[in-house]
Image 1 (cartoon, helix red, strand yellow):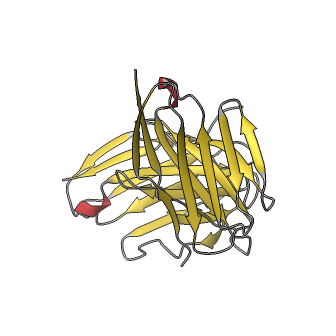
Image 2 (tube, rainbow over the protein chains, first blue to last red):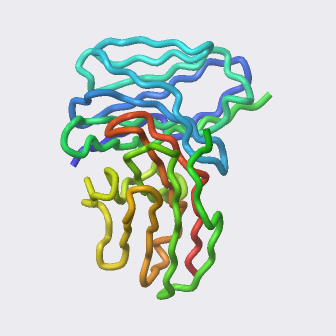
Length: 112
Length: 113
């Protein structure tokens, strides 16, 4: 079945440093979504990428979708303590079920 | 707009007991999902409904798990009998249609002793 892997599993940075998480799918995706889950919370939608090579920005967050539509990345510039949480990518393959497969997640810890 | 509602928020049971979780999706959302999230892992889809029909239940352990969405609105997920490895957060999510942005409820934390 479809697998979505993320690296790293965990990263600890100091406030102000940059952070990047990478997402790789075993199959070509229709689109990819990114979610953030704060400790003890539930996943919250951040963004969706649909086109090959697409790049989207949200303030300090930059999201990219690979040319082959099998990988993606999330880059945070100048991290803040509010960025703490686990970032999940979720890949969608359109079909009868249009099922979203979540990645393994990257947990980000930010300290002062 | 009210979000996805789930109850209970926490549940502690002993193995071999039964438990049920309830979810009320966002009004008008046709698609409803149940996920299991084990500590340190990503959400794993258990079952997906489109209105009151099952679209995908390929990862649902059907010998012990069951789910229904009889009127196409709220849904219940049941585990009978529970095992230790069922300890997890059970998340409900809804979308307007297939493949769209998922809105998650707060989840039910289940501990099986």
